[in-house]
Length: 189
Image (cartoon, rainbow, N blue to C red; front, side, top):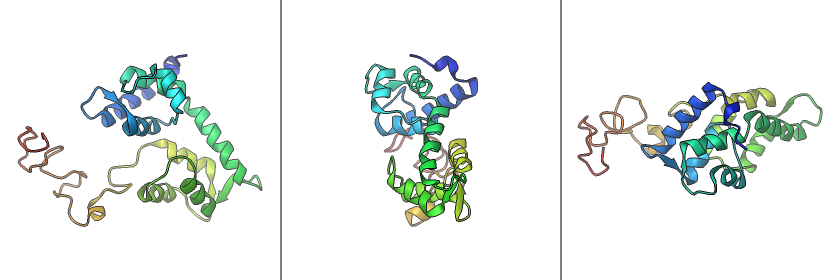
């Protein structure tokens, strides 16, 4: 059952931006890109939920992507996560130990990279973490480019340019430093 009508205009715009980012000049998403895009929209559907919303197709166009986003309400997802955090909150204080949070993030769900774990843990302050506030911080937005890693220091040198946009070359997508993005190089940029 479609719940796209329940999405706000802002949620639809955000879903479009996320879809376009991960589709990278394609009209469809699949595999890891689809999974990452859905997670960025605050949903983590099961494979069955994705198949139910998309008709089981491997490649997902934006309308079907929006169906998946609409079928898994963010509030439900947050409520489920809060419920899971409460298991670790034996004293019912609304907080858990920072070391427990790190163990949860390392051992539950999708395997986080070291950079993703470091970024998530940077949102937790003190030895005791208010898990509701932490969860809100996680659902707020994507980290800025370079905030989760991928900067020059991760590659053992300079990233190919000096404009701090996180991309090498003279301009966005320009990997041959000629500033034209014309496809006149081995990568088609």
